[in-house]
Image (cartoon, rainbow, N blue to C red; front, side, top):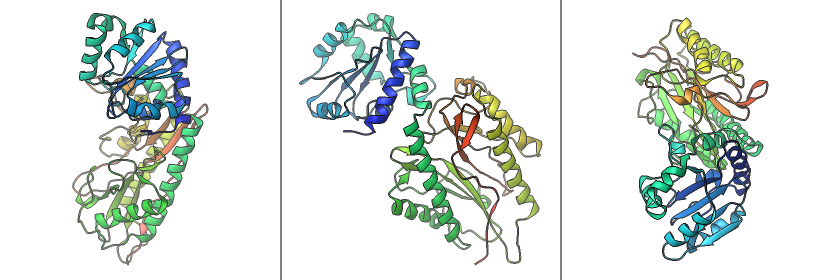
Length: 399
């Protein structure tokens, strides 16, 4: 079954060849069945039902060994020099193909820290060792994580175009939501507006099930990544939305904060406005600071410092993360240095990466919380905003 865009997969395989040559790796093997490996939609556009062995080669002569039922899907991609069909089991054919390739350095999809690079299951590794020999595999194998992180992180022009459209639609839906929400609605009812707008545009939620509601949190009832509840929103409430939209397999991740005016109010109370102004300053100072070559923890420190200098508690999560086929797309994370050490925050910003920036102001006991999240793409000069930024706190008048 085809899952992705073969044109994008062709771009990704070309990247793979480039990186494999740079790392002196001649072969990258992906073993997959029933969609076990999360790299497959990106790299090969196919979800194998039965066991398949995909050999990505540094010379560009990619091959796949697959079942009769999956054979046509691989042929249709046009990505492979050879698509070889096996019958009832593939051990003998696999061993013969493996031996013919004269493999010296074999990349496999395993990682201790990144789930998107950890697609080789324990069972398939045992199968590989049984068929080829444990000692031989141990002498050849190394992790594909550095390759896969680069390929997933550095977006092609077509990928960036799809993300831009996901962002545009997200901005559009937010405008419609702001026109329809009113005091007396529950979090669930507000979430249903997003679902209705997604269905009208033929798009879906980028996080969770296709038509799940995004995060809708009335701050009075606690800010957390939780499902919308039956809490009724009243005048004087702050409500935070965090919404990821999927468009043709690529996603946005944008958050917005609104305030429900009390009767007689024309603006938010000073404490709420100050919280918004601080979050706004933190996000844009972060975005303005971002340059290729900066490390993830260096970017995190910029937004974190703004929040702390204003007298608020430090941010409880990372200031930003990558966005692409997934809402949390792996690779470099814009987060703090912690123990145990996180290699993701040591990564460097690179041209072509897309980030969600979210230095969140969080307080307990119903005190003002603010989340404004924007999406940016890295360029040689710094960042380019993809989302239409929230410049001011959205005010909802009493009904």
